[in-house]
Amino acid sequence: MREGLLQALEVHHGSDDIPPSRTEQIEGFQQTYKTIAWNAHGRLTHLRNRGIAHLTLEKMLKSVTLDEIRTLVGIISELATTLRNLCQSQIAFHADLLDEYRDLAKKAIKKAPA
Image (cartoon, rainbow, N blue to C red):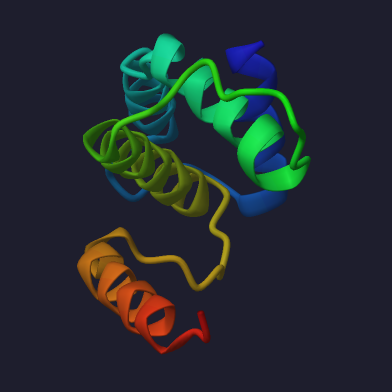
């Protein structure tokens, strides 16, 4: 599967001349992906399903901590950055701006009507 991805990227984007190599980027992606705490992900999904997307009368049975959410956001940002670089995408996401994004979100929440 990795060879097929590498071949498709070469066809679409040309040769792999600039470090880190595509092979190194794929390896980094896989290593980062392995750090996902799947139990925290499951509890976050539970919160989304019962407390946000589908408000139900059922009790919330699981919770997720702010630190767990921060960690998951950090992992997702690393994965997104690797994909952006690997696929030579021009998406506007920049992991180095996470603190700025967080501050903007806090300001928006504070300004929201109660």
